[in-house]
Image (cartoon, rainbow, N blue to C red; front, side, top):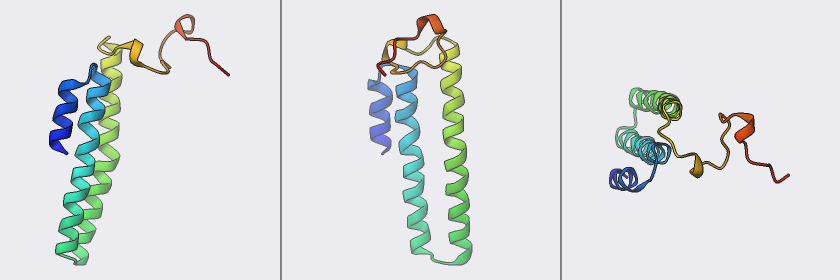
Length: 99
């Protein structure tokens, strides 16, 4: 997972894509490691700690990535041509909707 994240960070064209490549394997790798720990040491204290670790990371990692992405967008570090929907663009720059 770390190798895939590293390749994604190097190969993807903009900050938002790189951020996605860096955050997804991080939480999935943490879940895999902590589940392995819980399976090998199946006690109430260990399982409780594993659940707390996974819950905290699952709540905080996406929020941190979202804040970094918004800061990158505000600084002009993203590529608007790669966005399907740009909700922060002014109304005059919005593409027509195909509804």
